[in-house]
Length: 360
Ligand SMILES: NC(=O)c1ccc[n+]([C@@H]2O[C@H](COP(=O)([O-])OP(=O)(O)OC[C@H]3O[C@@H](n4cnc5c(N)ncnc54)[C@H](O)[C@@H]3O)[C@@H](O)[C@H]2O)c1
Image (cartoon, rainbow, N blue to C red; front, side, top):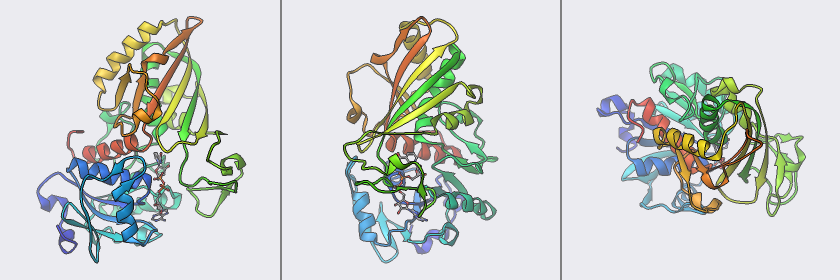
């Protein structure tokens, strides 16, 4: 389909594939596009990013410091990029409402800029029949979808402004929900170790906000040099988990370190259970859970380190080596997740659910 043909809607295309627009071509936007190119179920029709240099957009998609070279050719023409012999038009517009989504016949926008104004403004697209997937928590969402927790409740006829939550909640919420159902969680702590993000500083400076461009945060430590440091910081993992697992309200507290790595996060859970458990009971229970959710959850029995999980499609990999119990009911669990690739795989799974297709 060329740019000229791109007014054709997905219904007219006669298949269930969606015509996808991507707003924000950064880490998550590009990972989503890479997944879509590998998966071949939906058509990318438009990409918008502040970066107006399409040679640079091509370069960034082609070569990736975490995921290597793209396994396919990318062309360029006057409209944008050529992916799989199809033109993907490109724009560099700051305000999401001014991007020509409608002209391009977009069915769904993946909002991946992280800018709050965009997710608020995107709600207005529903009037034009354009759905939105927000790659962050959004109070305006009509469904917050975390696979392994609530995918069965997602109704594409009803839910049109969907949040895919945050990577940490995608990793923790399914396991927490299941452990709470199975053994009961009295209370506990989550510590996440999260790789640096693009808005951090190489050298010490103000703590810049991604959600509110131009603003700075009073959380000064996050403005310190991201290289060679561990930066303690607050995290929203617990509040994000509570949105989809409300029975965990006021049960957990959390804390995070920003760590000097490119990708792959880990969550260290310390949970006081309502009844005594053994390590064997916990691993056997998690095996049962994982077997039913194997697209999203995995278990690892090998002695791996963070880089070994790069490119994992799972939202969460339970590290079986570090399941430990002390005092009868105090449980420790370590979870791994590729915060970009695993999370972006769920964004694409969301597109599958929206279009009524099986997830993979
Ligand atoms: N990186 C992660 O680990 C991760 C995981 C899960 C969710 N997320 C969420 O995904 C979103 C994007 O994060 P990211 O890590 O990809 O950030 P990023 O900085 O790598 O990418 C953001 C992109 O959006 C572009 N952009 C910024 N403002 C724009 C605007 N007004 N219009 C168009 N383009 C604009 C930037 O140029 C950049 O290319 C955030 O909401 C973040 O919380 C990130």
